[in-house]
Image (cartoon, rainbow, N blue to C red; front, side, top):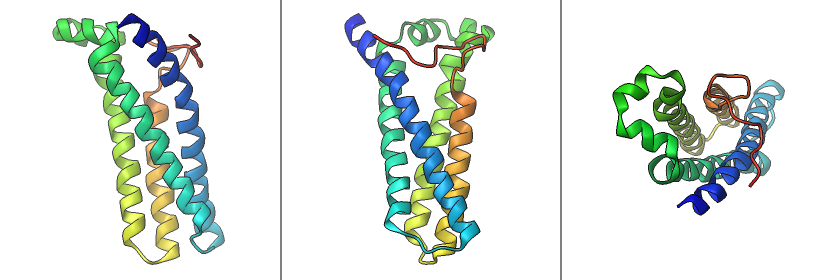
Length: 157
């Protein structure tokens, strides 16, 4: 288990950057599409697709860490009451996974709504709203360095 943990944790840390970059790109495409009133293009579609793919991959790795590999969440689940009293443990046991679940949900709802509308303007507006909200949820749920529960910007094996 330790070997798998030491592989998955740095991978989870690395993919965070792909999620942030693709999410910012998808949100930017939506916002610029609204502002410039341009047609919905394959590039807009692919930006949202790559964002959700990277987010789903990250979420799957996170669930693997949360339920099977992480000694932090294992300790939190052992005594959940004590974990709730400790801000660092509470972040990992509840806040991080909840924020990321919300972010993934927003991205998927946005993609679904984009596919159900025929108007280019509504597609861009939906992408701008849902992808931006998703990125904000992600940014609020990342354990940034300097926070009490912070982690390095990049973990290497």
